Length: 294
Image (tube, rainbow, N blue to C red; front, side, top):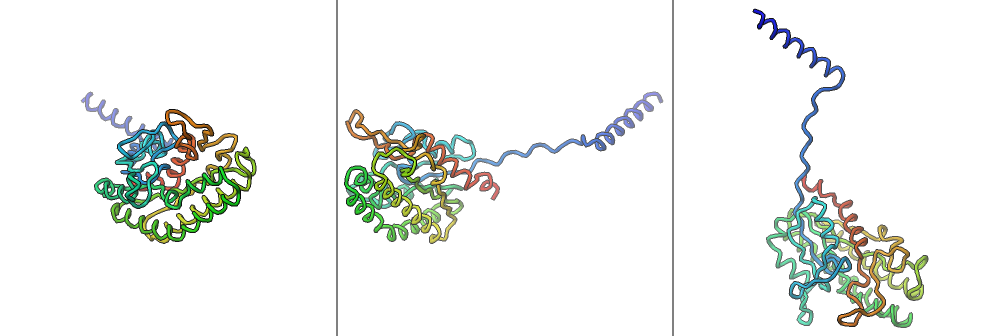
């Protein structure tokens, strides 16, 4: 009997505590939701996606990459599962006999399984295909007239590049049907207003004019492709951090370096801070957690 009364008292006491807890807002909260799984990620393209500028170049056969590029920064967040980075320093869109570097076309073909599983693909491509390097050299070393001619030459190729890029984005979408494609733009290389005059302001403006036109072309190609692709503009993030700014996020080593006694390939590519900015632009635009919920 005493035991029965004790149990009743315990039950009543527990019930009273439960009512009090609810009244005061101490009700047990549900378990914290598990974070979404990392998104399967594949990267393609040229030197900007290969990580050039982030650290020393290392060669896997004929495909040069650097550790610490924006792809690695994104992967290190744990929000993506990097299946493959096929990007190569100097890659063109198409394979040419005289250029043994794996092209973007070859990268797509060679990563069929990874792309089929991908939920996110990022790419930088197009600058090499219009001869941007030649135009840059002309603007750094030649008269303004020659610089303008080289820039105009490069820009004359942009209408054709737009059509080609749109087709490539469709090819990627076909190979990666479940993926969002993040098409990364390029930063303006110079700050003609506040930067150190490495070359004349007029030369700087010409280089930036070419980059801006290239970005406009890439954005137009994304729209024309009519696939699940997004253009990621990085120019605002790099504002105040051009190659000639007080705090540059773009590499410039003006003197030749050993062992080949030539200017480093990292010149005019994002430095580690620049690759961090690229990663931030990608993650803030795409938001992998939302992709994981689809």
